[in-house]
Length: 391
Image (cartoon, rainbow, N blue to C red; front, side):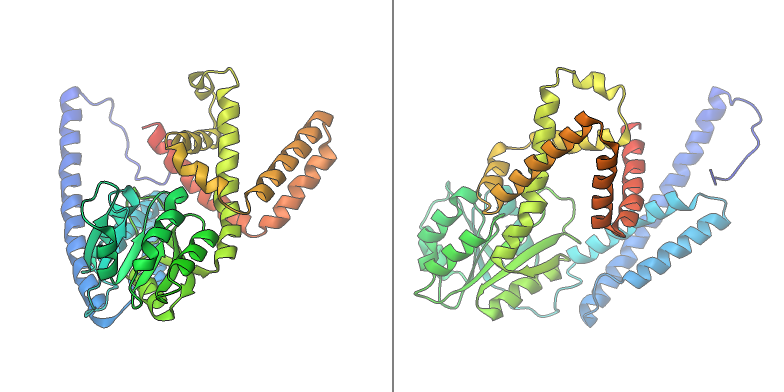
């Protein structure tokens, strides 16, 4: 398998095995000490990047590092692929540490007064922490908060609406008129057309800046580094660029689009994906086959599907229902899904191999060269999945 080969001298005695394990523990302790030293150097790198305005991520440097570690692993008689996987995790931790240290933040930045409406919820807390870490003065408002929300909103320079999607427009209508003319109002819901329109309408008299925002991740992510956030300009370019800079400073990838284009994309990225997961989960639950029984025969692909479905249904229906029901493009994608499911079912029932092959060719052409990347990345995911599932 590419690992260093040693000639066995027979089965070790218990005392010998204990001694060998102790030696492994000692080596691991040295490895951890070296990792700590590496992160101390990373902190110096973060300080340099912040001082000079250098971007956190350098793809060419990362590729050179990975290639060099693979070559070195091979020269030492180690399997290159596991070594690369280890270093990818180390590099991820390094980038996230640099972002947490403000490596991408300008050395001098103006602190802003930020109010997070819904700041006691999971996403609200995450956003409050993000702004606090960057040196801004953050206040939170929620249903259990005391005091006057309108007064806090009037005094704020940035107002974030982070409430359940079906309450967003109601909250915007209530608090939007109190936003200062020189301030920014933005929401973080999963649909954008209606909330952006509601914000523009609620701030029409003041002319306050408006941005539609959609973080493409949940509040429980281990790292913000590399996560994607979508921004839709509503009114006020200066504040739009400021908000974009905030997210980029924390290491997020920003996608700019319009509210309509966002909702059209989310119909695929969220609605269609959630819909197929729900169909799979409901069909599985009604199959009459106990989960434990099917797990005795699981393939890696089936196990991945199970994990996705189980994770999905372990969360609150109040989260997914509004995302799917309030997207203006939902009817189109769910109807298309049902039509294709019926078409494929008929092909299988007829045992029509020719048509089955045609469908495969149609989709293969759609994916094109992405299939090469998908094969490589899914292989990596399956290997890591099996390693953890069987560990």
